[in-house]
Structures are given as C-alpha cells and as structure tokens.
Image 1 (cartoon, protein in one colour):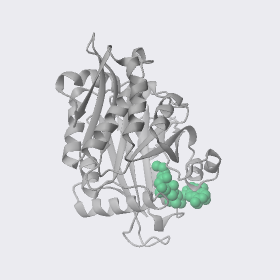
Image 2 (tube, protein in one colour; image 1 turned 90 degrees about the vertical axis):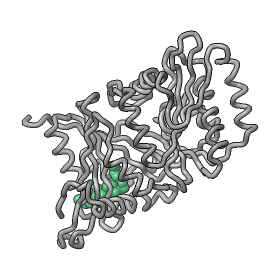
Image 3 (cartoon, protein in one colour; image 1 turned 180 degrees about the horizontal axis):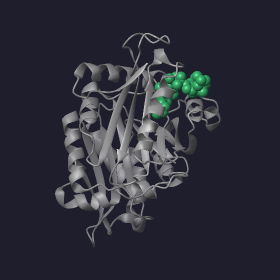
Length: 350
Ligand SMILES: CC(C)(COP(=O)(O)OP(=O)(O)OC[C@H]1O[C@@H](n2cnc3c(N)ncnc32)[C@H](O)[C@@H]1OP(=O)(O)O)[C@@H](O)C(=O)NCCC(=O)NCCS
C-alpha cells in the first residue's frame, strides 16, 4: 500500500477518493445522504483561511489483497493556525471492501506523524457509530479501531433526526411558551445565505463562543477566531456548492448585541437532508427561552421555503441537557452515537 497526497487539481483522482469515502460512510448508516461530489470538491479546494487541510489516499500496490491502484481509503488532517494550535483533527475512511488489512492504521499513523511534526500534542477525531445505546459502543469495530490506535474517548455526541414537516400546531405551542420570556427585550430576524454586513462581527463573536461554551467533555478548547472575512469566505463556498443557509438571530433591542443564533444548512438539491449547525445563546442572555425561539423561527422558515426537505440532523454532547431538551421538544429523536476520541502525542523530538 502507498499513501500519497490527494492531488486536488486532478478531477479523476478526486472522484475516486470521493467514491471510496462515500462507500465507507454509507456502509452501515443507510440514512446518510452524502453531499455530492461537486459539493465535496468545492469544500476540499477552498478550506477556511487559517485552517490547513491535508488529504491523503491509500492506494493498493497489488500486495496484501489490495488491487493495484485501488483507492483503499482516504484521510484528512486539519490544522488550525489561528486558534487551538496544540490540536489537530483527523478523519479516516476505509473502503467497505478493503477493511481489516491495516489501511486505517496506516492512514492514521501517517497523519499523526504529520501532526506531531507540526508540534501538535492532541489529535481529535469523531466516530459515527450506528447504535443508539451507549452499552453498544463497547467493542463496536469503530470504537475498537480508535482504541487500537491509542485514542481514548473524551466525549459522546448524540445525533438526532427530526422528520419533516413538524405540525404548525406543535411549533405554535413551543413558540407561545417561549415568547413571553423574550418579547419586549429581544427581536428575532431570519436571514437567508448570511446575515447583513453590520451584524457579522456580532454574529462571529457569538459563534466563537460555541467551542468553549458547549460541553465538550474532557477537552479544553480555546475560543475560535471566526472573523467577518472568514464568514464571508464560508458564505461564498456555500454559494458555489449550491447550498443554502438559514440563520435566525436574536438581537437585544437596547444594545443591538447578537444574543443568540442558530444555523441550518441545506446541501444542494435534491439532497433531502438539512444539517443543524451551531446554536448558541450568549451566556449573559440565557434564561429567556431564546434557544427555543430562534430554533422554532428557523424551522418555520425552512418548512415554508423548502417543503421538499425530509429531515434535519443535529448532534449534541450527551451532557448538554439544555439543548437536548429544546431539541426533544421539537421532535428530534436519537439516531446514532458519535464518540469523540483523542490521542495525546509526545512533542516531536521528545
Ligand atoms: C474504522 C475504520 C477506519 C477501520 O479501518 P481498517 O482499515 O479496517 O482498520 P485496520 O485494518 O487498520 O485496523 C487497525 C486495528 O483496529 C482494530 N479494528 C479495526 N476494525 C475492527 C473490527 N471490525 N473489530 C475489532 N477491531 C477492529 C483492530 O485492533 C485492528 O488491528 P488488527 O487488525 O491488527 O487486529 C473503517 O472501518 C472505516 O472507515 N469506518 C467508517 C469511518 C470511521 O469510523 N472512521 C474513523 C473515525 S474518523
């Protein structure tokens, strides 16, 4: 087996890597509606400024049961240069036909060596395991793989799905309960494909708190460093992918401060899925039911403008009772578990 960088300028190589990656994620998770190749290519070719992304492929060389030049697996390393510079993130996917031949191990060790060479001391990865009971994580192949590679579990996210449409009466009831707690002090606004310029700094300030404010188990994160310029870059990438983004924010009337936000992202049609991205109520503004308010408003807009979408997918740390309560009240139900795992590294040369 050879591990080589993926040549992002090579459309054929990219398609083969994409196909191998999709075969890995749909194998035992049939509910996944992967983003299209076209969307993936835009993503791969335009990482957010300040984040280095390195993609590699494992190619068979005719030995070890791996056909010559077959793409046996793919892996990606992300290195942020603007925050959390002690960490690296990895993702590895091994083609369904080529498992248990050491491909995953070789890919991870390759990227771990890169992370160590960059001075990173923690490598993080998310597993998506198609079980709903924590007891079933024990001994699951993906968990066993992570353990065999020296990763420890540091948190568990729970992925929930919301089947659409949610009945108006259910949304009315949630909204009526929340409204008296925020009305008169905050205003809600829903924006399509990005908030206006004058709100972007305030939104970025709120978004940068997500990594530190949301429970993250045993990992210490620094605040992120999203800026209006990076936000504009991310909107441009979404536009080029044919995606849409619905953002509802709560603005404090007296100060104009962005007190809460929630984001839904719609992969390009005809994908039936909608992804819930971040939701956050800034600490000083908690206790006014703004989490429910922004999420219900965003969902109403989604259902009005995109009636063909079939479900919303969200993930929350399993100790995030507050966000989970809001989600369960809306009708989200558990679909799979996503352990977050970490491997600590000795500094290079140590
Ligand atoms: C997890 C995954 C990457 C493993 O790839 P792989 O090439 O089959 O793994 P390897 O052959 O390198 O296995 C390395 C070690 O992991 C453990 N392992 C891997 N698969 C296992 C299984 N099905 N049962 C038990 N242990 C397993 C073993 O200890 C194995 O070492 P061994 O073969 O010497 O016993 C692959 O199943 C996959 O792509 N899954 C979907 C995506 C995913 O979960 N990625 C990981 C998070 S980013």
